[in-house]
Length: 333
Ligand SMILES: Nc1ncnc2c1ncn2[C@@H]1O[C@H](COP(=O)(O)OP(=O)(O)OP(=O)(O)O)[C@@H](O)[C@H]1O
Ligand SMILES: [Mg+2]
Image (cartoon, rainbow, N blue to C red; front, side, top):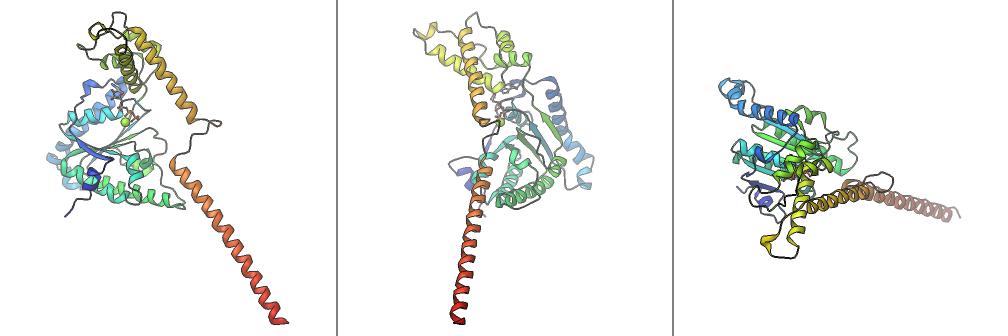
């Protein structure tokens, strides 16, 4: 039998990918509360075999034995790297589904592919990670008026069914946890909130982004100062470090004499801060209204078509009535 996932794995844009995790929890800096919630989540995973195996609960409960976690937080706060670190900690592979990409590629076939993805994770004993999963977590719509709503509802129902039957670990990463479907929320064991890092965490993230031995730093570099001065996410800090290194490397002179100095880091951090504010302006251009996503664009197109069809039907109706009147006139003469 052919595996329906083969086409997903071999497609040019990889929306489903399995890999052996490299990064560990030592590579992630988290605020104490987030770290604690994550430790509890890991303890649940480690005790899973004990509870459902030796203690016999698996024989009593054949459904709902899996562990589902939701990592929620702003971009660049370490959700993806943490999913990788957890799989590493458990000695498992990570099966990543880039959900936002997948949904746009799987139009009309999302439920079938979700089933195949769960099956692949079970076969490979991999931690299943739905990245950018905001759309799945959304409330099922009551109206069911649009084709997209209908497909979304079927998708969420299939996902709930698969989650219920899955006896493994599933992690969802979302930027917005507000719109959660209550049924979906019930099946998620733990929500881990990834907050923006504070000064302490930022200072450690700056340090983690460079190589402790190989990266040439000038003596004036002070990560604590950078952490106090710039409120950035871990992802922003990573970008700033790469920009600073690129600027230092581009300077004239022999490579051996090149150093990344405080000014390189400061310029890079300024650039990242201003790039973020430009992004925010373009996202919220037009009086604080967010730029339309593809579904609102789809709804708009559908609404335009609907009005066009109504106008056409109206015109056809008028023409029909006029024709009837003409026939009646002829007959009455
Ligand atoms: N808490 C953190 N500790 C250490 N490094 C971090 C942390 N957060 C982010 N980083 C760095 O930033 C990079 C991007 O982070 P990651 O992709 O995990 O963020 P994310 O929360 O998944 O973002 P998004 O919501 O945009 O997917 C990581 O590869 C890592 O180098
Ligand atoms: Mg991510």
